[in-house]
Image (cartoon, rainbow over all chains, first blue to last red; front, top):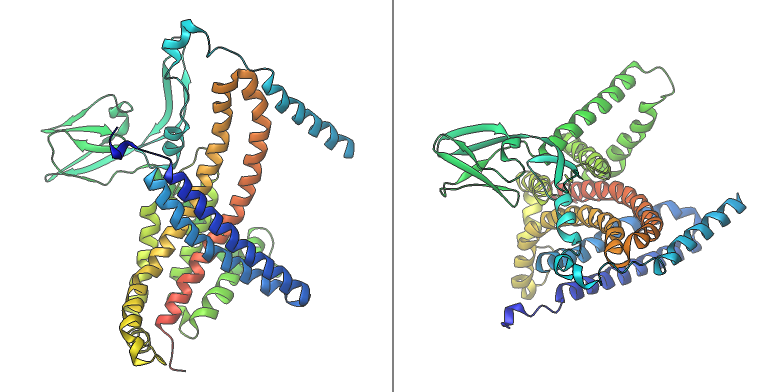
Length: 73
Length: 354
């Protein structure tokens, strides 16, 4: 068996790691946003908007990893 | 209502649990082992076929009495430019990849969805493919909807009703909160482009969720063009402040300049690149998830037999419904993010001296 045929499913592991990164990042964003909304309910709308924007940016980075994993595996 | 929910929950649970008892052993009988060995259903080609572009609009296959697959699809025109000759024909002449098409001294073959010329001549493919046809449909739909809104706005009969009441707040939201806020005084110059980008991405994202439609914004060529136009606009409208911020970042000690200037210079290219990848990956990943969850039913049919497939079906369809609702949110969000970031980049390019 040649070295190039050894396929241990690293692409799937890579995609999983990217998903962990996205989960941790967006979880932290959501948590901080909820804390801020609890402290100042009158600004909920603005906080929610910024939460969505930041979550989309973090998800963009995680999807870089997913795209590379898709190309590989 | 509570009783209805209880009945439905118990019904779904029973159907799902019974998959383990209904498993047929048709894959273990020795006489079938030779013919059934390589018939385990592989979801990857099916999922990839739904994501990728194609020269015909394929809906489904049906099996006739002999067991042959008959595809049901709409053929689209193929427009090729080879070696100074323009060849136009319908993709039905390819007979779904089984036939070669000869026009003059050129012979074309469909290989893995790409058209190649058997003699090795280079082919420029201008065909109306599935994505191009879908873009035509969404552009016509968008034109009809927005023109109706504009006409209703011009008539100004008081409180807006119907389509105008739905689209006008969205248009005003894009104009005020995305474009005007991030670009500032000169926003009217960039308003048409950003408004078009928002509605184009939104309507293509939403139409892509309909079963049997084309995956337009999940095609990296489409997102590349959109982000390339943003890149061209920011580079052309960059004023002295913009280039000054890149090559002479204010407030940076001289020691750090050899690091900061290459980073800022690369940033000119990585920002539109991230725009492209973000939209492409979000939409494609959503479609792949939905298709994979439906494929679970057929994988269960292979592993557990027909009973297994019927049992997995309700769970799978519920998951698909849940993911589709999230995908509607993602459709809006990705259109908003793309337009917002494009507005921010353009705003940075035309920023005035503080």
